[in-house]
Amino acid sequence: MRQEEVIARILELKEEKDACILAHNYQIPEIQDLADFTGDSLELARQATRVERSRIVFCGVDFMAESAAILNPQKTVLIPSLQARCPMAAMATAEAVREKRREYPEAAVCSYVNTSAEVKAESDICCTSSSGVRIVQSLAERQVIFVPDRNLGHYISTQTDKEMILWPGFCIVHERLTLEEVLEARRQHPRAELLVHPECRPEVVAMADAVLSTSGMLRHARQSAADEFIIATEVGLLHPLRKQNPDKRFYPAASHMVCQMMKKINLENLLEALEKDRYVVRVPEEVRERALRALERMFEAVDR
Image (cartoon, rainbow, N blue to C red; front, top):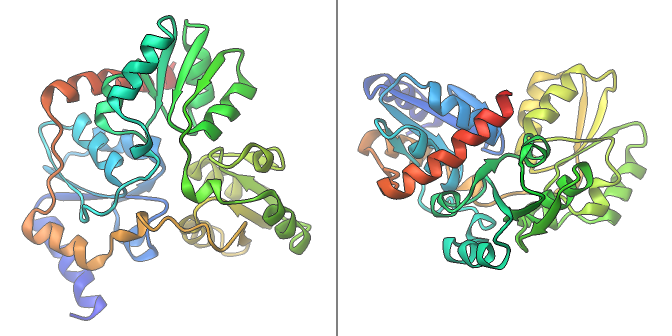
């Protein structure tokens, strides 16, 4: 089938199957353009609770589809590729979190949404990159075990008065961006604003004109008087940035900032997901109920 035929069939099946397509900002352009809704982790988690259709096809990585299933037990949640697995989420296990709790019995556990359902179930609350500072500061406990991203946890620690116990995990894509690469990007584009995701290394974050989630970057670019931007996050975000701001210029901080796991989903396996109800995301009910409490606390804290 030609690409136009694949797209037409996806749109046809979406209606036949009563499905909604959610896509993360790092997905390939063709998937983003087909989605009913695109966003960052927080926006997609919220949108998952508002979906009225009986099926959700989640174009993202595994933990995102799990979160949709946790929040929507009455719906069928599909992920088009089982290979779309977040390496950072795999850096924390439920047993390791329980061990860390025993080591710090008075600490709260705050899990980044980039974690498995099992880890969320062991957590007091979840957060996203855009809500982490607010959520950690809202906790009554003085000590906070932050799982699994040490770079995001470090950034939060600079913005709050909490004692942060940082997990040694990291995002491979953001961790690889070096200070030297950022300095070179600034040398090449001296007029550009530098927008940095807080999953980047501390020395890169320290260089930023603004530290933002992906959706925060989209909002900032629309509102800023600047017309050039260096984007220090996964290159998939360049597509909506350029689409929403055709008169502005966007440069990747480094061309290697590609999440191969996010690119596992394509038009062909999205079509197969709709044709064959492949692959259904299931979370055991005991795990789901406990993980749901951590996600609900996140929403409550953000909405205060």
